Length: 377
Image (cartoon, rainbow, N blue to C red; front, side, top):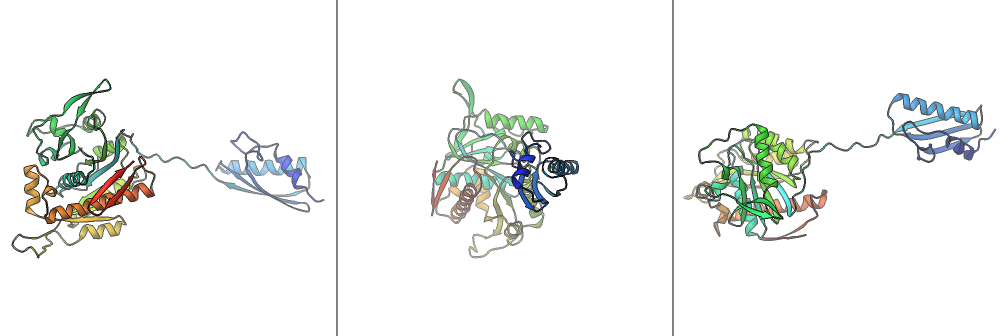
């Protein structure tokens, strides 16, 4: 007897795949039917991965064809399982209206100049014409107010749509909020994780940041509660990791990169910055002394396959500028200004690449030109 393919299709309309309401033909579970004389081969796809479901499907198809088409048919059933993709349990925060790009500045360990890099990135972005804010999330060691000479300032309250909001303190064209504004000089912040996280959320969501092209978040050293709280609260565009060239710092920087790349976090690492890359004394401006090692962060970026954003030299004036509350990048026509401009342009370019190649937090195009940048919504 020669089997008729249409008869088999009609017979399989009587049964459904395990866990599905529609019949096998209607649901698209049957992918192909091949007949040859008294033989039939049925290719089917189901979503249930259990062995019991596969066996039950195979038996039901064979029985249905034997009962309704031809009892002596030689039936072969090929069952393929395609389980529906499970959504990733990613830690993602909610968007703050008006803030286009949020960049976390992190370091594996303390003392590598993370806050110094954050402050100089911020003022350089502001000089380029961007609207910039800094959230000082280093709860236990806030230093951004000192670096911007606003340590004695207090955020004012403003009424926005009937709600009282904090107005960030502003200097050098950069809006700033820090736990340092709410503590006394010399007062230690002795808080457990939940209290610190609550304070952070207030600075994020109970503040009127206005329109910002970039918010930089100065994270605490290491990896811990504060980092997770930030990533739960805000949809980070990306992260940059600051390190010195020495092996001890690089080992911790590697952990910092790994934290952002965890499957449940999945924040793009825009690149690694090497601070204190070399020392050049004033009296020997052509000499470079690699006190902490040579190009360690650059080699790490190559090993981890993340961009190297640039190196900043170990220069006394950077420390002095930070202590005086006027970031070194504001010094016009100096090698330091040029170094921070190059670094900042590289960061902006990586944001361009991130927003072009990955799903953006919010659609944005950044056009970077030599020495100047502009944001277009």
